[in-house]
Image (cartoon, rainbow over the protein chains, first blue to last red):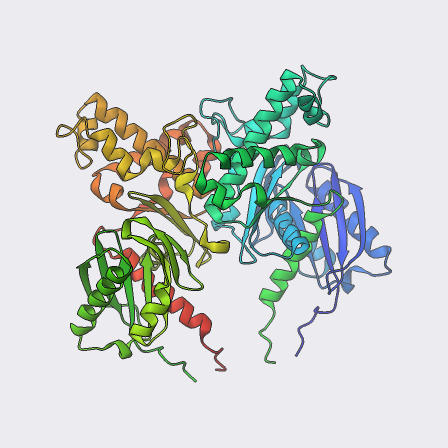
Length: 317
Length: 317
């Protein structure tokens, strides 16, 4: 017996701080449609925007909600993947929201909810066709997610990946979390913007690497700080979890033209001083995705599929 | 159909720098016998000591090699768990050894080989009855291994866990790997011994924490360096992988009386300055095992069992 839903499409929804992106994925993994809506804040706003983006997507292909096998949602904040509950998604104005249950009653099909960075790791794995990777999101917040043999590393409470709050510059500036010198305080988008503000309009995030290459001393210093911080995150992820690749994504990566190459150069320089690091080839493990690939929305659909497969009765043949 | 070996005992062998420890584990997980032999260096010596410890163990229960379901071996160095090949086990005088194949032809049953720290993580999980933990080995070398939902995180080439070579003291002393300020250069046993040498006999590793409590300034400084380094490793493991527990083990932990409490105190102090860290409760995640529990030998047996189960044809009933 084939379990129900095996031939039906899956909807993935990525709820970001500014945009809500829905994609419709066929059973064979093809993107059938995608639509973007502005995110609305607050619990009701978040749900309204998600439903609007979803219905836009379905409507464009002549499908309705009940045609779906399942729905997956990626959202920032602390997400209990087992229950679908979201807590403390500050930028979305959410203190606590039972997102899985609310959307499930709207769609009438199973809805899975996961942290957006964990969803992105699955989306990256689907694109690259490998099962051992980390996804490092460098945006306003800094966090990572890792797949080991195709499965997300979560830990109880889905805590895994909070590497933004590992101090990498002891004695450095204070992080929003209260510690000094956290990775997020070094490479988080908000902190970078604050450091660049006195330099603008001469140096901005999109022009930073070019200005550094042209010899602007402030740009050289700032580009060095950012690329070293991201390089340290890559080193930390690979040595801790053995990831074959670390996929870089998020607003800082997509805005700062040339940054990924600087990170690779920094890692190559570190390998010059260490046979061990050279053998690990950190620079060769850095990857990025096309900026128009909807990594978190596709990953959200993969989360839903994985849950549906795990819940399906074992096939007898 | 019950697959062969399900009722037969498993042998676990932990090959350490000085001792080779064999344990015989019943199908229900009971330790039937255990024996220790001095490790011999070189490829033939390592194998001879492993066979001697194994035969001592079997002999004490009236069993022979062919009574075993399978054999698991934990050994330091770079271990390709898929092939059973060991490389660069410096302390054992091994450059390259096809350990799995050599022992398999001796025992006449399947032999699995894994890195000793990865084996220890499985042994710790078996003792504690949980599936999401990290094992942090602080000995001459410093490395970790993590289980996520009961499965070891390996990465291609079994690289995961090499956290000893993450710099935690930028600008610190040079590590054997060539980098500056690696975790291993701060808390590795050899480096601690070198720093304590000028202080001995007044302060040694077993008396360090007591001397610090009594106010010896050198001991206070050194105990602070070691406990902060281990605390950083715990923080790094939990925030990266979400581990419910970090089990501390290895020579430095077992020799330095009171060190684990100092690590907990350091982590509690860090939580005082950060609501985020307080919510994660790092101090409450630190665990240790009874020092006489043969964690790596039992874990080696678990590695073999997991491989045997994965290789067994799926049961139809």
